[in-house]
Length: 267
Image (cartoon, rainbow, N blue to C red; front, side, top):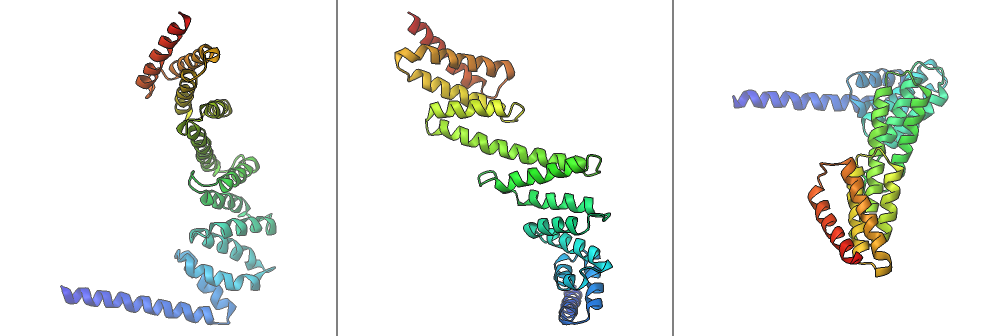
C-alpha cells in the first residue's frame, strides 16, 4: 500500500515538474504564436496565473489586431480571477473604451464594477472604495436595464449600501458610547431620517432613546421636563414600529424612570 502511494506521489511530482518546465520554456520563448496558444490553453483550464503572465507578454504585440480584443478581455479576467482587483477594474474599463462595439462590452462593464465591489473594505475602514463600487454598479444598472446580470448588480449595490449604513450607524453609536449624548441625538436622528429603510433602524431608535434619556436625566431643571417628554416620544416611536423589540425590557425600564421623573417634576 505504501509503495503504491509512493509511486503515485512520484508521478504527481514528475507531472508538476514537467508542467513547470514547459511553462518556463514558453515564457522565455520569442514565438508569439506559441505563447498565444499556450495562454489560451491555460485560460481554458482555469490556470489563470500562468495565463495572465503569458497574456501580459503578448498583449502589446496584438494591439490593433483581430486577436487583440480577445486577449485584452482574457487578460482582464485573469487579473480578476487572481484577485488583482484594482488592475482588473482598470483593464475591463479600458476594454470598454477600446472595444465599445464588442459583444463582450456588457460583460466587461459588469466585471469592472464587480472588481470595484471586491475592493470594498470591511466597514471599520474608510469606505471610499465602497462608494466607488456603488457608483460603478449603478452606472451598469442604468446603462443595461435589461441585462441578465441586473439581479446580481442590484444585490451587490444593496449589500454595499447596507455596509455604508452600518458605518454611519457605528459612528453615531460611538457618540452614545463616549457619553456625548447631545451629539449622539443629532447624528442618530439624522441617520434615522436619511436611511428610513435601513435594517439598523431599530438599533438606532433604541440608542436615540438611551441618549435622550441620559441627557434628560442629567439636565438642569429648566430643560429637564422638555427633554424627558422628548425621550418618552422616542420610546413611543420605538414601540410603535417594533412592539416586540429586542430592546423591549431595557426600553420599559427607561420609560419607568422617565415617567417617575415627569411625575416628580410636575409635583
